[in-house]
Length: 326
Length: 245
Ligand SMILES: Cc1cc2nc3c(=O)[nH]c(=O)nc-3n(C[C@H](O)[C@H](O)[C@H](O)COP(=O)(O)OP(=O)(O)OC[C@H]3O[C@@H](n4cnc5c(N)ncnc54)[C@H](O)[C@@H]3O)c2cc1C
Image 1: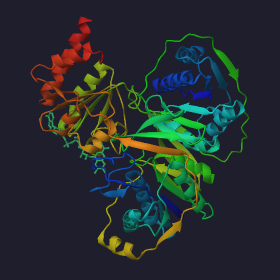
Image 2 (image 1 turned 30 degrees about the vertical axis):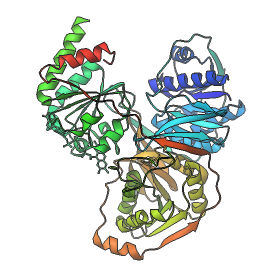
Image 3 (image 1 turned 90 degrees about the vertical axis):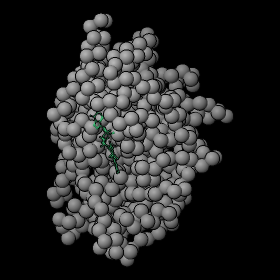
Image 4 (image 1 turned 30 degrees about the horizontal axis):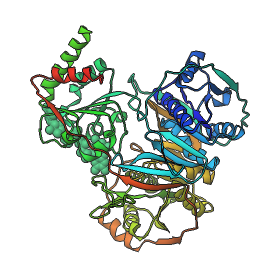
């Protein structure tokens, strides 16, 4: 029951979600008493690979091929399939990055595997079977599932397991040569436009989010300042993105991005059920709203009933003071 | 252009989700079902093409029992030409994708739309599986799509950004916000939908690969601890003591 982790590179770096998938793979292999390895596609610095070793994976299949410099689902599915098959792995683990989410379903077909998407935590064992938990109904339900095949593809829900980088080991890189024919009828990537925000919302450990209660785009300065001080990403509710006070990629919720940070601070957001669907797996939720009846307080850990325009500047000062006293 | 839109029949976004006492399934009492919102983006996009050309045919398909027919009728009211229902209870993503693929494989669709995921299972698995089973090129998480003859330019969401792609039809596209605006069916559409064909297809025997054992509600928050708006410093010091910030 050996485990292979797809350790996805993003501009030559491993993101936290990838190291989380590695940590998960190591823990699962330990539970099963089996081997674990990783596959890394593309260029990166040697020191980057050492992070995987710290997560507990020494054996790394390394694929370097000019065809694979840009991601396409077909090419990446083919490479990963070859490594899994040629080396007899029966469990493939990935993060839930957009690219990983785009290849796992297809890979499960190629590998004749069961696909379990977005697991939270290691499986429990009952009658010798691994029972996995995942979230369903947009965070409103927890589902327990079992795979009916022995080969499985698993994606790990972002920020649900954590990164454990406390291992030591010797890096063992196995170059994997993969010849891809030039004529694969595929999609041609033309350009990547990165958003200007420094912290990506899906990876962010902390998020400061604003809603319609902030009255207008000109009032986002304090949201950005608070986020900057906390090292947080910024987000917003749907109506805020709809009227273009904020860019669409900040829209969280049922129809926007689903996030699960350690800390979510909601300012001037009522907490409609569709909004909650995108943020309810945040570990700690802080709500600031002038209406003590706002539904969001029911889903919050900490709350302040008050006017955002008074409370947020005070919070900013408090964070500054805290930082200065450290 | 021959377009297929895959429709999942899901509880309305405002539903308070509860489960049957045995945990096996959703408690459907009082629940309103709708077209999965992400699938509806796909249907809306298909309608944009249809409005620009006389040569666009839109079929919609759903794997489900008779309860799903009102949802398919709504898709017809929005403007699809015909609807198909594969008559079985969906078991897992694999069986759904296989049933649709088996039905669609010889029908020469130019474009297949799905949502990026359905809001009940949230697996996001059917689009990628279906593309693989049909051997279609696949664009996931599309936020923009332009078709010119057989040539396609699409934008797709990636971590921290956007990717611009070129492709050729036939193509499978999984849709999310941005690709089109939802539409509200008008009276004429609703009337017309009554007489449009809705064909029931017998389901092949397909074995599922994942079994759901049970559902439960997540553990709720234990209650909100309030801090005074006069003194938000207190909140910051609590978050800091707990190592949250
Ligand atoms: C199919 C569907 C999908 C949807 N998907 C999403 C989604 O993905 N994400 C999403 O967010 N919404 C979604 N919605 C919309 C959702 O129902 C709500 O309308 C929306 O979340 C409300 O946004 P809001 O909280 O910013 O605004 P409002 O509901 O207007 O709330 C503003 C809040 O700010 C507070 N406030 C006002 N002034 C102040 C002040 N000075 N200081 C502090 N607080 C103040 C008010 O008390 C109020 O609670 C969806 C709706 C539908 C029908």
